Length: 526
Image 1 (cartoon, rainbow, N blue to C red):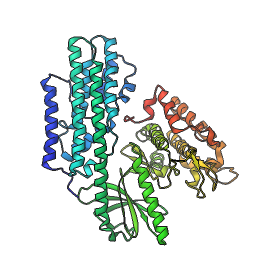
Image 2 (cartoon, helix red, strand yellow):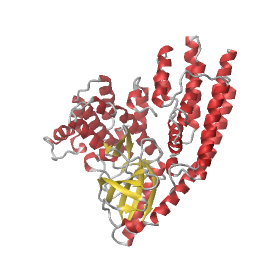
Image 3 (cartoon, one colour):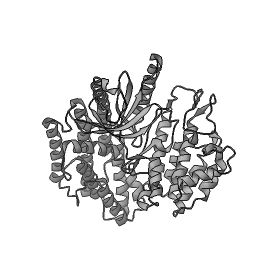
Image 4 (spheres, rainbow, N blue to C red):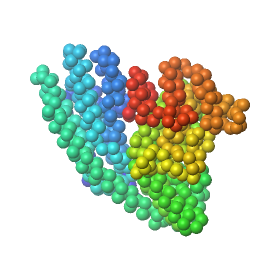
């Protein structure tokens, strides 16, 4: 394992790119009114444009920029290379986007609004072409193949972005419209380059992760126990994060790079055949999670195997799970600073589950403890029970094992009974009802007691008390009546007895986007 700082040669290449791009801005007299060093600063300036132009759609336009992936990569490079806060790749990208928008603004208000929408569409199309690959750049800073592919992508991206800026500047000076054919050619060329380098980047990451796994497993003799003072391979255990039937999850730190991971360690017990099945299950979980590349799904960095256990190393390492977060809100008497972050999580979780279902993967164990919170963002995790339905003729299968936690299990989930994607949406609806409960400043304990009282089965399970569940969330009082209407609409279409009547996560997400206030219900990255 190398240090977190990349070699001087590659570091110089990144600095040359920065020097050349900022020099282009100066050379062509692209004098922006501010250097934009962060998303928050860009958002503030963009919203100011919207207010000045009396553009009612400015928040919707902001979402259409789709900057998440390119900014994520730029941030990783800046962190590894230790670029200054005002002279780095993130600042270059945000400043260039801001320059394109500022240069397009015309004195004529109507024309200015039209230009703003057009420029946002151009940049959004460029950003949409960027390959969506989790780079782990800061974990493999000396990998030449990874460095080269990522450098090509960011080089092409910034070159194309500045070409767009210059095209807009030229059109403004000549008092003509933006040359659509020229812009189209730029975007098409960038998309081709992105696709080629994206494949190389993916292969480089897979190869580097495989080598890392081999190095870790070479020291696998220290995997003997799950003790908290255990030091495995090049990792030191910092604290326990959770415990399951198959093993424990710990927060660990790689001793060279100081990178933090959540390590899920599964014991390989019993006969050789049972041990083989355990390894196969781990491989299945890793394969599924690696196929789900989404900003709100925990990613697998790599996994290792020894004679006694398998370990999956995950990112990010969360601050807490959703259950703990909601209980903390109750303990702290529902302060707004804790409640406000919850509102965007509804849309974020819908998009995460929609991606999984669109790839024909069912989670099968959605519950608050399998949803993580990190720096105010939400992440779906633990696909250990997940099933890949690719190749099946229907969206259901038969299985003699009952998956899912009983409290959140859908009514139709029984041994030998068909089950499928609707069970996930039922469980997520139950979780949403708990999130809504806390937003209404009611405790989860009160909600549980309400479900259990007079229950024919003396059960707190949602499926056993559907009428009481509906009565509970319909009776909740939120300060924001619009938020109440949105959540009630979704819950009625998620927590239903008949799986055929449940909406898919994609349908709910599409409906949510039609709401005029939809930006409240998802994070800025969507």
